[in-house]
Image (cartoon, rainbow, N blue to C red; front, side, top):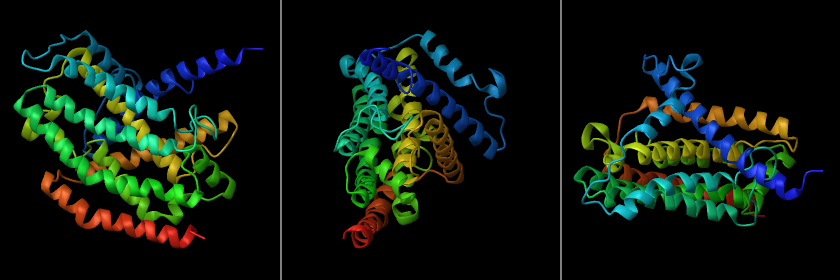
Length: 321
């Protein structure tokens, strides 16, 4: 018999922990880039690996070998810490999401609230990364990220609480368990919440039309302009992991999660649903042009937040008794 401590360590390090999630992050970056290229009549990754499958990993290795430059005027401590936080926060959040069964690696009553807190920390870290660079482009990008957070964080929080109210629990694993037990997905009961959640995740991921903080045609690369080498590699990997997190949350909160306690079936359902979620996010990304920051915030406060509140009222009427 393998000791329980060894099993837990292998789960954290290998499957469904760090190694699996990072490999999945590289794969979903490839899916995103390949599909986006197809929708824009381009080739996308092509030569490195079958159909360019290994291109994201090759880009990561290439960045690790590049010169790592820190601007002389930058706040060196925060400038260096930000990439580590941008990778560690989404990885930690993924441990709260069921991947290979109905229960996540870390599960407790209230873990949904903790995950919301991690989302906020990611947005705050983006602002700190831009501000600590002491560059006009990075500062503008960081401030845009902070303002954008004011637009999408509130409605995203409201619609994430919707499934929790219906399942009467603040545990992501138990929300998945409720959908599995009742053979019902929350997307059917909360379509408005699902649409708002997808919209807010586009803003969280800085996907078009909400790539305002890093607008390449306006402010070079925004808050990440001054990053290079190993730091930029960690930032890009963190963004890939955040894409996995976004797809996993769509799956867990609205699509029933892994839907099985058997690891083989669970991981199959998880991969299928999260891949569909990535396809949805990428397709929406290809359909729109960038908003201005004032348009984004005004639209969120005038339309998205009222719709999120309406969704909460409907949930209370339908599941409150």
